[in-house]
Amino acid sequence: MDYQLGDIVVLKKGHPCGCNEWEVIRVGADFKVKCRGCERIVMMPRKAFEKSVKKKIEE
Figure (tube, one colour):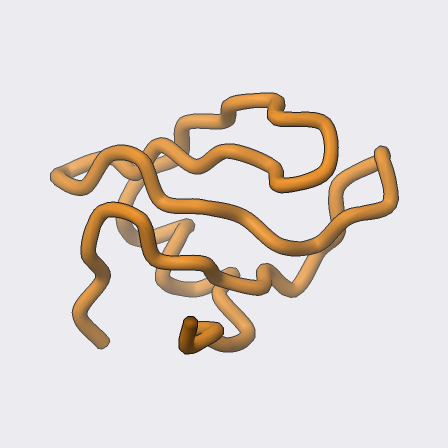
């Protein structure tokens, strides 16, 4: 699947704040995603990100 900046994705594991929606803010060898609940930013390798995505939300 192809991910672009600004895409909203749902990851398999939710964030401790209770929200499980994330906004993609960097794409490359690593992905940087921002929690839509508390706005915490997390960076993860591409392979781990693609494996943990449950679905992509269309907006």
